[in-house]
Amino acid sequence: MSARRERAPEAKPKARKPAGAGEPALELDRIIHERLRLGILSALAVNASLTFNELKKLLNTSDGNLSVHARKLEEAEYISCEKSFAGRMPKTEYRMTAAGRKALERYLDEMEELIRATRKAQG
Image (cartoon, rainbow, N blue to C red; front, side, top):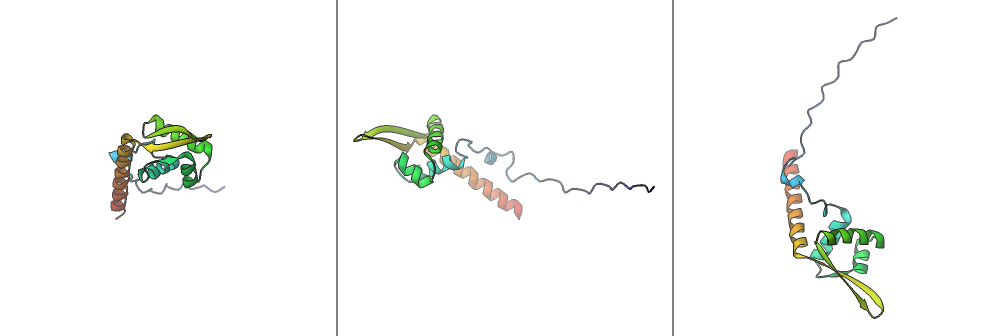
């Protein structure tokens, strides 16, 4: 019977913190930091207002998805929603609020800082 030799575990390189870890840059707004909600805010940042159908087409999403994510942004007071009728057809129109514009600017600044820090750390 041969004795089996135990191999010494290979030294693993020490893990590095991601750039900006523990700094405000990684404290991204979780309401905005979701693909569809970021899309809604980005679209409203460059348009005074958009209807539900315009957003749905622009973001290539379903009624249900858009409704859920728009409601989250409304609850955070990042967007406002106005419901009316155009003839007999219901019309839902969204606008970005001042708080939403400020939150998006802060989010974009934090993302830019995170990108800069990551590129700098990569050398």
